[in-house]
Each structure stands twice: as structure tokens, then as C-alpha cells.
Length: 334
Image (cartoon, rainbow, N blue to C red; front, side):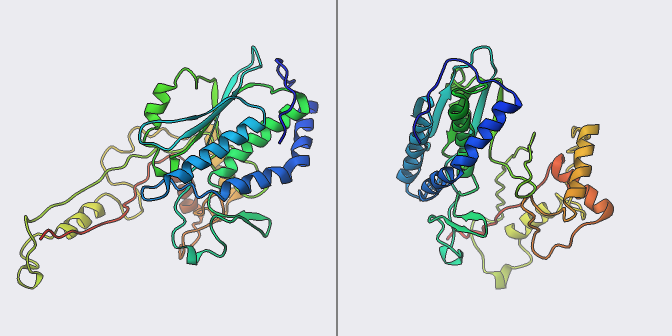
């Protein structure tokens, strides 16, 4: 990936320029796939207990890639106790907007590797897809940005807009330092809009734009009953059971249809606009299997919703808050 010739002038934005950039991408598609494979081979798991140096190696490899496509001010940015971010920019389009591009280079743990059909960190092409941990989420996101930037630079010698790119290193672990990072680098990251490549398409070959996602609030709940364990054969039943109490608490949070039973939680949920209703109607037509995710997968054993249930499932996923209970541990203190 040699650095293209650059000029301090914005590229034109017309059909001809776009077609030239697309043709440049098509010509180099195989190269971008090989670059993606290089990143996938780095086991950049950001969870505690995994090799932090591998995440650093991933960040450094990402910086190297950004330099090779011709970005300026490329650097590995660090926060205390956090995995590194990769940053680069191209600011040579005076008078044009500035886009902030986002992706992340860290990945989830592979889990039980014996259950993988292929090795998680050895990318394999099969049935028109690339298999490997991070091949989609989200190292492919990095290559989406890289391919777009370099295709424009090679075909037009410049970009149609100013570009800043930030590649996070701890997204899968909860982005613990992201807030402080954004405050620290607020001026450097100033932009007119942000484009994030960490979402999905309806299906292969059907580009999709995600304009909003639901946020997340995590609450850890601990229930205590007794100051010490007691024998269940002697005391089971008469004394309170913390695990049963927690189960009852959780069961009261949802209605039979899966909606949240907390009073007032839907009061400030905005109704869908006309255009959003049209989008929801499209999804109901495009995904007759709604109840599946963007990749067409349905939870095992779940029948396909139809009619009003189908409409509710699509609308609920788009706008309504959801509620999940994840994990339960029961401890005895001796």
C-alpha cells in the first residue's frame, strides 16, 4: 500500500469521481482483504486476563496501516490503565466538512476454541466469507474506512471532505476510558459528523445505514440474607433465600409479553416519526423472519412472529428500551 500523491485541494463530489473511487476499490479489493487478514491474526482480546501486549500490537498494526494509506499525524493514543487507541487524519480540504470515522481493533474472547470449525485467529475464506474472530466485529470496520480513504486518494489525489479517524482498543470490554479520552482530546476530535462502522447490514450486498442505536445502563444487584451459611436440611424454607429473592425481584421487572414492568419507563419514549414508520414497514417486508438479527439469525427454538406480533417486534427493537438479566452467582461465606 504505497502512499498516493496528495494535494491540498478537496476532491470533486460528482458521479464521475465516485465511479473512479469505486473502480479503484474494485481493483484493490484483494489487497484490502489481505490487510484484514493481517489484523485478524492478532488476538487483540481486551478482556482482563488476556495478553495486553497483543492489543498494543493490534493498535500499532492499525497505525502502520493508517500511515501506509497516506494519513497524517498518525499516533497511538493512551489512557491510564486502558488499551491504546489509533488515530490519523487528513485535513487538506479547506471549506469542506470534517468527518470523524470510528471503529475498534479489540475483539471478544474466542471462548472454547474446540467448538470453532476453524481457528479463531487464523482467518479462513469459506463460502464467500472470511471466518475468524474480529473479521466482522470490528476489524472489517477498520478496512471499510481504510479502503474508502485510499480509493479516493488514489483516484482523485485527495478526499472530498476532511477526515479524522479513531480506532478504539477497549470497546468490547466496555469502553471504560472512552469518556475521559474524549474529554482529553476534545479539540483534536472536533468534527461535523461521525461515521461509525460497527453495525450490520440486512444482508450481503444490501448496504444499510444505521442512524441510531439504543444505549446501555448496567446495574449490579446484590441480595444478602444471612450473615453466615446455614444447613439447608435444617433451615431451608423458614429462613430467607437470597437466590430465590433475587429471582422474584427479576421476575417482577417484566410483563408476560416481554415489556418492562417498571412504572413510567416508557413515558419519555418518543413515538416513531412518519419516516421511521416507513423504515419499520420496510423492515417488516425485508425481514419476514423479523425476530432475527441483521444477519438473519433467530434465537434457537423461537417461532417467527407474524402480524401484530411481527410489527411489535420490529418497532420494539428500534425504539423501546429492553431489559436483560445476565448471570447469577450464589456465594456462601464460611
